[in-house]
Image 1 (cartoon, one colour):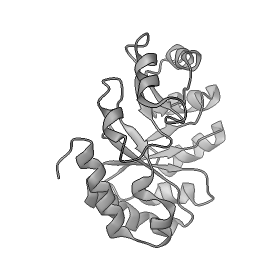
Image 2 (cartoon, rainbow, N blue to C red):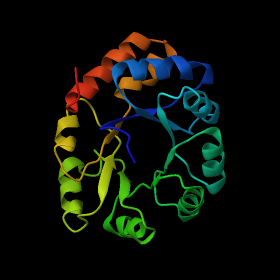
Image 3 (cartoon, rainbow, N blue to C red):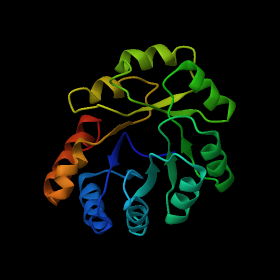
Length: 203
């Protein structure tokens, strides 16, 4: 699953803002976005962004098999869950869509491996011990790649991405709700570009 090194976690209250948001992210150099299903606009926003053709759009905060089915139908190219949900994993695997389950413990990581998955979301990352915890978990699970999400700020992005086990980081500071609500697309682009640079990408 190729989502780049920085995956913006987006919460949209109005699907009409999806297209200008997508434009801002693309201008900033990000190839993918995770749109959460925390709001009623989530599915419509996924459909709008998927229709652009220049972003790989995934669905986040997917809690049920029905949500997974609807997200995939709306155009989600990957699915992210806050914890390990067997029914969601099954639906995604049957649809051929990558699924990234949340895993905060060794037991949950083993559950993911048993399901044939080797990429997990480490959530909430900062509260669970941050890079040090990922380094500890990665020692026995050498084939597992982590996408830490939760509380990650620009100050710690390089600490996470320095770990070989980290595939990407999920973060929301570049798409903060107040920026979207104020339609501050230029600021979103600027923050996105800064995140890409911090992750080792081109300026």
